[in-house]
Image 1 (cartoon, one colour):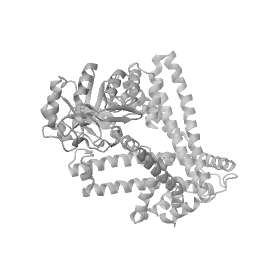
Image 2 (cartoon, one colour):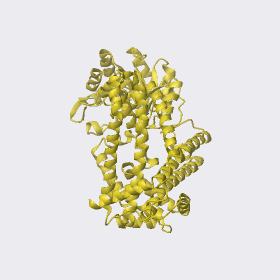
Image 3 (tube, helix red, strand yellow):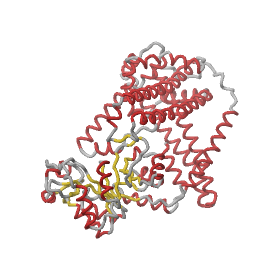
Image 4 (cartoon, rainbow, N blue to C red):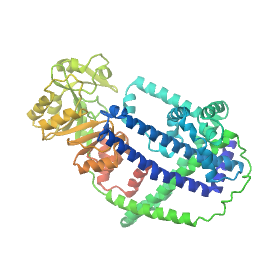
Length: 590
């Protein structure tokens, strides 16, 4: 603990003494990211769409898109660009720390030239090792390393939810995560070694990092974890102090709340960016100290020449950025004062206390107040419609059997169970009758298994007409062709397509799109509104996600927690305090 304190004090001392350097480096990194990386990525993607003739990428066409020669070459180009960006971002910080701890004078040009000497490594077999290394290290990066390119990375929830739905899946997921973390931890010092040592190869750096893990690794990880903890506590403290004036003014002087909220949000945005940058610098200082066993006692051997620099130009730039951010936030917050009419859609009924896709779940969802209740249907071997999600019976009944090979009568005799609850399989007719009695509408998802009868769509339309719900219900499927046919058969029926993945602008002829939350962007929301196509986002089971998309007023959120979603919508309908809006926004940004 004593050494940890010394290491951190020395790191803070170096960062303070060379603060001008760090401000310039982080400014350059941000400018490079937003002026080159982001625009170039967008341009390359649009070019890939134009060359290949695709309008947008989904799970249906991604395989053929990815094997196109031009796409392959552009993806390699982008990966190389990102890899180089990571190399220079980390390399600058590690080299600065290396020179500072030794009292060696340096210039940015010198650091740039030293990093350039190793760029040839990216055009040799070592680049493959680089890619594998970063892929293995990514889980650790997402937890500990605040790299600019990893801030927006996440695993789509529908993938993890599917994996975590079974005991074997949870065990496999845990094993993979543990292995990746172990590999990442033992490789943690590869970049400090590689970037600071002029003649060492990446492979040799990897070997040295693994050798280091036999001695001071636990102490290093402990200090990095302590840094993250302190960083989070500081963020929480500043958030509390920074939002206190807004908390008071919203209650005493409501007329000033909008302007105060905009200024408060701008202040917190700037502070969080600074804290994030400091955390990166602290990581670099600590890792270099441990890598090269730098003495941690005493002051720097050389007082930096930048110590007496004047910061008037920098202060002016910060002031201008603060004013611009404040104005933009005021405009944005003013637009967010509305009563959202986002539909709350209960995913497979209300599954808390019930088995999915059952009459009990339907009744519970209706009692909770859901606007729509989503159910999954499939066609049985005798051409009937059964309410069931999976193709096989294994998960919910523990028995072998495939829905497409069984009759409706056989299926209705089976007992399904989940989370300690039991129920029976029902037909679509059963669901519609109960839904009509409860005066609630259904969002019907047609699961296609490939053995449907040729008249599956006319049969469905005929059934909805017979129950007089054709104009009230919604029908969706992951099969775009079938949904296009359905829309032609029943123009008054609300028809939609389910996408687990989408990249790029959509141009569909249906009434709505159901899209997994990881792929929903502000630009897509705006484009779909202009095309008058509704957007349903699935499956939102975190309060943060529910807050975000209800605030954005998407047409519908599909969730296993309709009760919580309704509470969140009600709060926003009642014009929740700006303070609450700011806290939600900060969650989304950081």
